[in-house]
Image (spheres, rainbow, N blue to C red):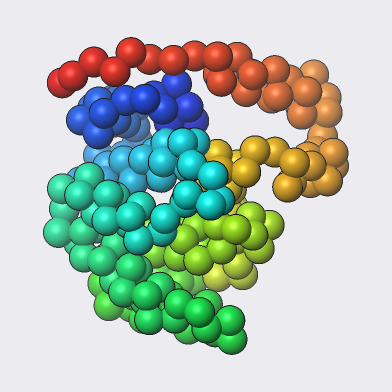
Length: 207
């Protein structure tokens, strides 16, 4: 969830630099190869959205690029499955989102993880990427569908919201922002940090 911020100063970085930087940033808490892959996927999705408009955003292209950035077979296959699911329901407005995503999660057993709580990264990635790629034109709805999936809703919605914010800016969620607590380290403080972060830019060196 927290890795989304890295994509802002690294918005011009190569895939190799993104992976190196992401791995270093999360090594204290996430060392499993699939967890590292998903952190790379999340940062890369935000990076992609920062450089696109709603007209140029291409879900199929994004998923193909994310798949190429993964190193584990499980994560590559899951992203392929998300792409196939989205292609199968393209143009169909009358779909049950949960019924489409649930089989993707069920197909990859992980002890203690599933749609009731997505502990495993390979279970979180379809929830996030499905919402992002199906509802990128409707950022509020993308976040709402992520929450409706249940389970680790704050993490799922934060990851989806990060991509939506990178693509749409902040006006789409302005009324949500206005309701945030605004103490000494509340809303205004967070916005000041965000402004400082946006000014940072890391040189695109090679690994």
